[in-house]
Length: 298
Image 1: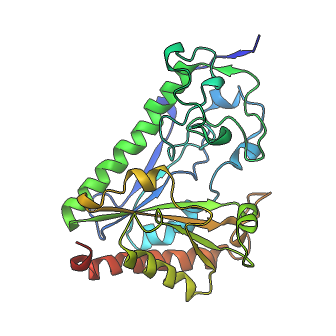
Image 2: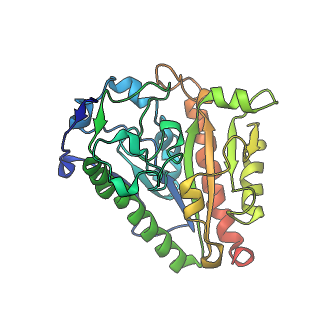
Image 3: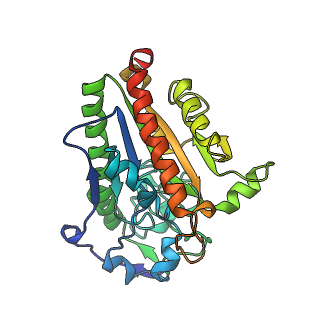
């Protein structure tokens, strides 16, 4: 019989979200930063097979820090999740849940979510970045529901509210969903020497082309190698918040971790400050571009 893992997290003690520049909106632009959280509930850590460093390899390391100049100095509105994605992944649909992870999964729902959990990296991660099991037994489905209610739903409720407020002010909103990607997948997917930046626009469906072209050109003229929609065309947030008829647009930004950090030690490398300055300048320029082309976009 598989071991049953039971624990209860005190969510009142968790610093779940950080939000920036949400009282006044300077641009029709919202940064979503869902995967760089470094906080683990202590109850969770007591019931996993791995140390914090191993679990942190599931996260998008230092992405919020990369964007800090754009947020703090540039005044860009941003929403960042502080909880590590190994605990709950807000860039997944709720159906992306593996029923086989739970000892008490509702029998009438078994099969509904099969093949939707991204090989162990669904809304509740089953494995680490190197595909090692996170748990040595089965979880309680009721506990997973609490993760979703207290963290996942909170993030999306706030993201939706901010999109609506920015749209009300400017007539439209662009959600730039900010991530990092492992260098390994870039070397596998690309025939070119490297991919520094991947822009995902759901194959030209998530935002007007002039937005994607502007961002691509900004990176290219700073000598970053840019790929569009390979290896990532956009995940749940890019898809879910893309509503062109409501003037809600999305673009997914993926930064190759090797250009700013050591992927094994999780430490910033000597290029971090330059990468941060470049990307923050590009994002601020994007904000101004959106203001200048408001009439064309709307």
